[in-house]
Image (cartoon, rainbow, N blue to C red):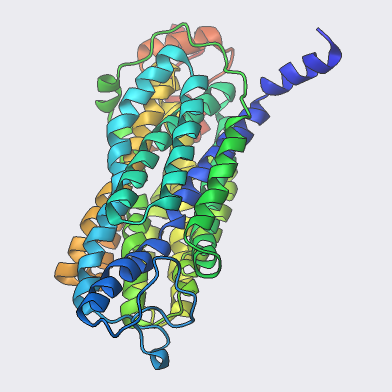
Length: 473
């Protein structure tokens, strides 16, 4: 083999290339996840409410399905800085937009377990490539969809692509970083891709929609999905050990507690996505570009939180990091309805993003650690469960959030989900020092000359007798 080909082959097998591809996969998935947040409410208002008004009053000018280019929003009085008319339509739109956003997560919930089983059988490479392909198709469909039904289908299709790329990507990352500390840092960097996607998605969507047109942000994302799909890292050799069945992992209380933390912490921001822009339209009368910019503090702080606590969580204890994070999530959500303008949202949203970053960067590597410690080191299934937990937050959040806003109001929605996070936080204490199964400890003591690294090293090593001297005693 020539030196150039040898260098290329070693590069494709590099854990850093794997990390880069997974980073970009999560980035694209979450840009597409959030780019629609400021676009869909206004687009549906333009195409449906304004069209209905114009059919009743033909004297009114025809609305265009493209982005409204004028500073005031469609149907608004120029003197009111963009407050929308049609209170009943906006109330119903809360529910419809919530269901549209939730469709991706609902489909992902159904597909994830099958993708986990598939990766255990055929490896990670093919599922990742399928994920990029489906994501490309979904993005193109978003660009050219002009009705609620087509947008709904495109969003659901994105859920299938996301299942393949997320589960396979996280499983691949866990397999190429077997050391627990290195895996925690790598997961923190990869989740930075997720954070960056959330960070740029909503502002990118609102600016491109207003100044270029509806299709423009989606066509850019479709091009990037094609580029990243061409970067194909070599898959590591598949595990010779048989993967632990999903049913066994779902009976593991420690995995369930970690999954619950992921679900409830992310449910908060999932409920904000469809409801906050509409609440702002009703109470703050903002210009359209502010609908996406409202999420900017949460996204920036999430990016900081995931990268910072990818390293720190292993030192301070992932259980403690997650417990503090969930409490801060709850407090931040309780403060959101107190805002009277976009500047009042900066503090609560920044606290929310930072806290969710603490939880995600702690629980994602912990899921891999738990299967190492208590089951077999095949990661596809456990990261399918982690992604299911994440998706449950993004399925239950938007689908119920819109209905709760309609019945009780936006402040009550924030109070309910905030209190839920604060109440769940103490359960993270159970993850302080999870016990290993006897079978796994015997295998680990043969494979590794030292203790498997824990995020609470001293306590964990005192509990598990691994050395010969302790076994003799």
